[in-house]
Image 1 (cartoon, rainbow, N blue to C red):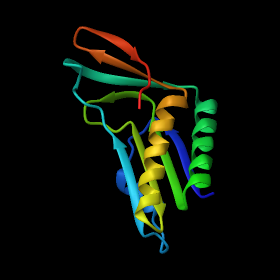
Image 2: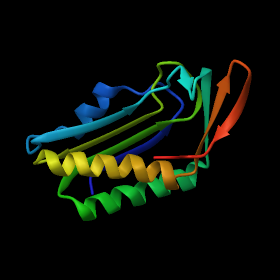
Image 3: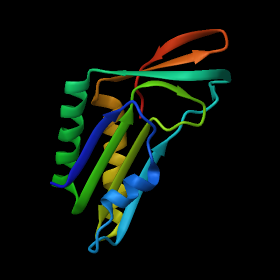
Amino acid sequence: MNTEIKLLVSTLNVQDCVDWVMSPETGGIDVFVGTVRNTTKGKGVVRLEFEAYEKMAISEMEKIAQQAFAQWPVQKILIHHRTGVLQIGEIPVIIAVSAAHRDAAFEACRFIIDTLKQTVPIWKKEIFEDGEVWVAAQP
C-alpha cells in the first residue's frame, strides 16, 4: 500500500496532495476537498473546531485506506485532516486517490470520505453567532 495519512494542525495544501499521489502510471486522480462553509441549516457559522483521538483516528484512516486498496485497483491514497480552529473557507480535509483509470479513483475517494465521516474519531464543533453545537458525523 502506498499511503500518506496525517492529522495536522497546519494549513492543508491541495497541490502538495495532488503532487504526492501523482506518478507516471496514473491515468486519473480524484480529489475531495472539504471546506468550512459560512452557514448550516440557515444559521451563520463563525468557525469550526475539530478534535481527534489521534492514535485511533490514524489507525481508522489506515484501515479505510486498506479497504479501498482491497476493493479498487488504486495506486496511491492520501488522507489529510486538520484539527484545531478553522475559519470560513479553510480546508479541514483532503482525500486524494490515484489510479490507472478514473472510475477506481472516483469510487475509492467517495468511499474514503463517506467512511471517514462515519467511523473516524474526529469531532466537529460548529460555532454559530448565537451558540455552538457538536456535530454528529454524517456522510
